[in-house]
Amino acid sequence: MRLTESLALVGSGEARLTDRYDCNVYAIEAPDGAVLVDMGGGRAARRLLENARGTIGDPVGALLTHAHADHSQGGPALQRAGVPVIASNASADLLRTGTEAELGIVAAKRDGVYPPDYEFANYEPDRAVAPGTTITVGGRAFDVVSLRGHASDHVCYVTETDEGRVCFVGDAVYPDGSISLLNVSGSSLAAYRSDIGNLCGRDIDALLPGHGLPRLEDGQESVDQAAEALDGMYVPPSKT
Ligand SMILES: [Zn+2]
Image (cartoon, rainbow, N blue to C red):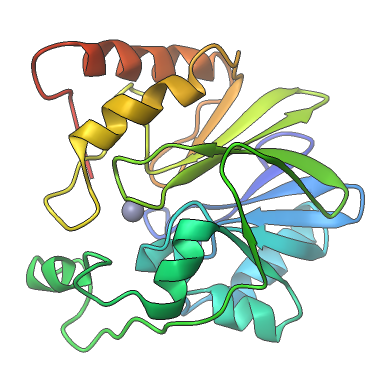
């Protein structure tokens, strides 16, 4: 589903564009092909690839925002298809050795988010990157921005396009300005407070979240709204 000249939504469980356990998966144009952001839950990786090829181009790499299963478990299937997986150092650790308790899956199974027989597959990403650096994937540059709070390993990716500045924000901030605080290991309001400033003052145009609808203009307003709420005394509006 093309969003702009350079961007497409290629996976979404909510829209049933792909498997129901998939987060939003995006493809962005790069000089060497398409770069995917997030990988879905792993049951529809072939369709993600087909959707990317049918819109933006052949995937040359996949960036992970955080290791939660609905974002990360498509990784092994993408690797088998020749698409390298790139994750932050903290996400890479969780992908390698994270337990279902550390990844929030125990609680998610109890609440019916995943089926009881769901199993998280640990795997080795192809490349681990440090927050606060700029990386190049498929010839396109991305700033890796630490934004912990929803999860202890969460990062966002910011990149420039002819249509403006794009932020793949994962599950950190939604277009309505709400955050996503969970009652599971790794989720922390204190971490949100310490990291939200990393995304302030960036003049973001498109804010592309891991769930729900994207916002293609004035995305910085959503981030600023979340930052302002995190400055206050009460727990900010939060959704899953
Ligand atoms: Zn998540």
